[in-house]
Length: 178
Image 1: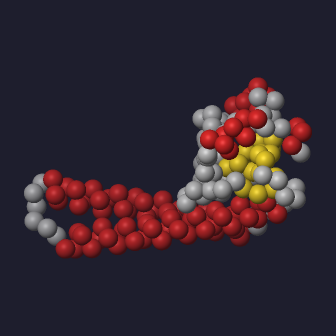
Image 2: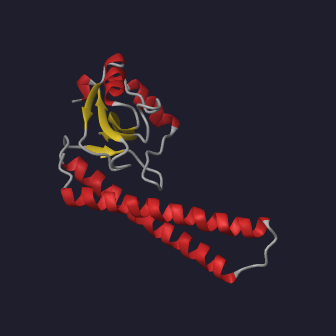
Image 3: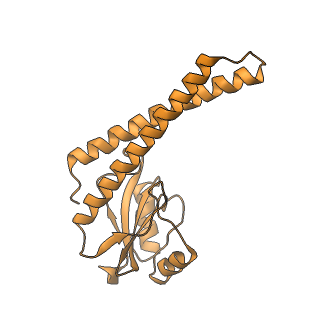
């Protein structure tokens, strides 16, 4: 994989900032809800704090998505010519249409089978699915068992751009797709 260490570090920093701002936003929302629930008078400072937390969260989330996209781009540079990620939703995850799910199944791959297949991203070549990248919460042994049971190759990546340090990234392919 050709993802640079600087991109890896920037994704980790962006993810940490995203997690920090999401916690701050939840705390601000809880305080705001408590104010409303307890019938306390409206507090302009509390409102401003919540709005600032929302803005910081949105910026951190956008930065994280941008860094994850950079990692995807670098990941593909070290892969066979013509590989590209399937269309993605706004959050960077694969946009699964009924057609794409059928194509994935015909290719002998699976797109959804928690906990091994989670936060999956379909890779296409010439418009046909050739691989699935999963950012899995499963243990490596479970991933290997899953791959063997489904006659898939499992290539463990050295880090997950989806959730660094928490997910195990693995690329599943069929023998004939390589």
